[in-house]
Image (cartoon, rainbow, N blue to C red; front, side, top):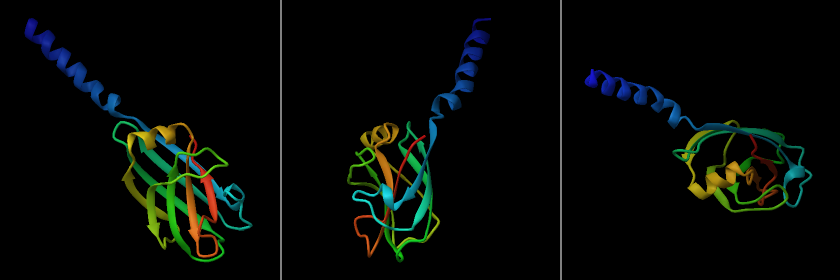
Length: 140
């Protein structure tokens, strides 16, 4: 009887393990020149979806953009700033990227905390706008 109770306890704990580890949250952004700091007159626009696991600090992303002043020269996720302010690069998404950008990577725990607090954004850079042509704040 005692062995049965112990075995059932282990099985119950194992059954809840996948639920305890599931911490995936989807963050989305709509990008445009008006969100840049300072704003650009770019007709470009874009969208981003970032799936983040706060337990492992792992990310996956899909970023789409169109209508830029020229080819994209770089794309990043920046963390540490609310809308209206700038921050440093947290996750590089690629140099000379083409739409769509897909990939995966990781963040530090501090960057993940910024993402959860709405202080991360996706930025697409061009030669005409090296500081960023379009930007979108990541929210969930």
